[in-house]
Image 1 (cartoon, rainbow, N blue to C red):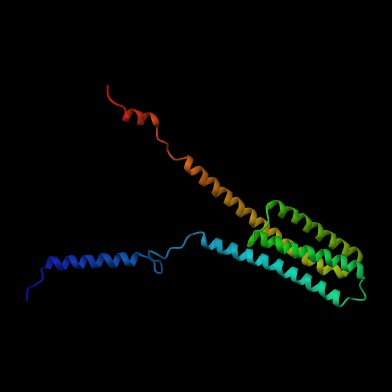
Image 2 (tube, one colour):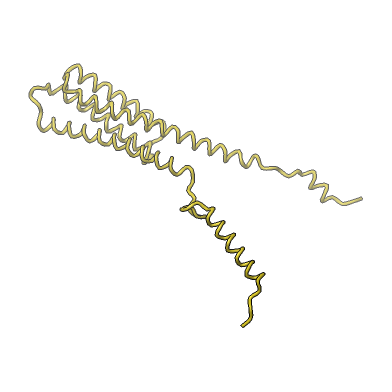
Amino acid sequence: MGRVPRAGLLGQNRQTMTRSRSNSRQPPGRGPGQTSGPGTGTRSVHTLTLMLLVLVDLIVALLMVVSFAQFVFRPDPEVKAGPMYVTLTLTTGAALLMLVLALNMSYLPFMSRARARDAQLVMFAMAVTGVVTGLLTVGGAANSFAMRLILGGIAFVFIMMQNARLEQARQAAAAGQARAPAAQPQSHPKSRQRRGGRKK
């Protein structure tokens, strides 16, 4: 059997040493295809908070519907029926409209901006009128309705703020895309004419 030259063995040993050093320099758990983008964490946090805010409005609307149904089928004799019906109608309608607008700004955009603004004005008017009417006529029986609407209103305001930020980001991205083609260098027609012209 022939002997392997020492120069070949030394070259192979050096290659294995360099490979082991390069592998040891790479951090564990991060291969070439395992890098994550910097915006994935923020996007997941935004979606989670948005889902929780919409869930708050959903719970408020369901509680108002349950209270309205309970008073209709089992009215309290100690509470005035007429003012209570007015209070429950206005506050329940405001809570349901709040839920619809929250879904429109988050997951189901089916309204235009003008209609959404009109619906917001109607919602706030119904909520304020219902709470004021309940506190002036029914008294303490309307405190729970007021607290529910305040809690739902806080969640709704945060949904509005997040929607406004998303709209600003979309407008900035659209403006950047519109400026990109305009920034490309244009060819000069004079140079083309000079190159294509014939020598006299």
